[in-house]
Image (cartoon, rainbow, N blue to C red; front, side, top):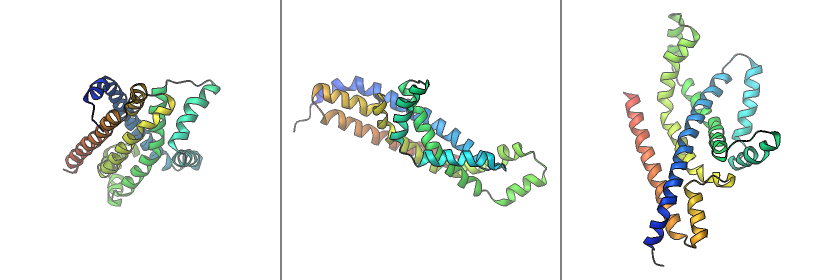
Amino acid sequence: MKWDWNAVSDFMPDFWDGLLVTLQVLALGSLLSFTLGLVWTLLMRTPSRWVRWPVGVVTEFVRNTPLLVQLFFLFYVLPEWGLTFSALATGVFAIGLHYSTYTMQVYRAGIEAVPVGQWEAATALNLPRRRTWTAVILPQAIRRVVPALGNYVISMLKDTPMLMVITVLEMLGHARLFSQQHFQFTEPLTVIGMAFILISYLASLLLRALERRLVR
């Protein structure tokens, strides 16, 4: 089998378009999952069972349902109810929502790992509840969970190809389309595979640097 550099050259414009979409989905999906995960965690710690019960049901349902099914439902079923969003927005929301149910557990573990003495000290200083969370508990908890959150970022990256099913052309979507049009599969798929490896490696280096900075 001969490697065709011309095919690589022809594919590169499509690759850059796909890379941009992939990074956009990854960045926005990560931000949404981190934010929603923290919201779920705080809601699950409220005294009211009328808040905890529905949040628990929703997060368990989302966590135990395949992301692929959620993508189909959000993109193809919701429009029948009058809720229509772009394919990209649907993909970002689906990935962010799905992974928020996992980051929720990460935040929970981080909060529970904060020493009891920190809670007692905040109470002794008569800090308001909001101040206790924002100034004492969450900064310590988030520092502890950065490595776990980083693992989910990489998992989200590897799940972005699923967005092909709702017509989002990320990296693998462009490679598949190029391959079908030019009947050349080896070159574009190899480029995509190397790109995923490189992005994952760079993300892991960035997260390690962030972890070291937060531990200081």
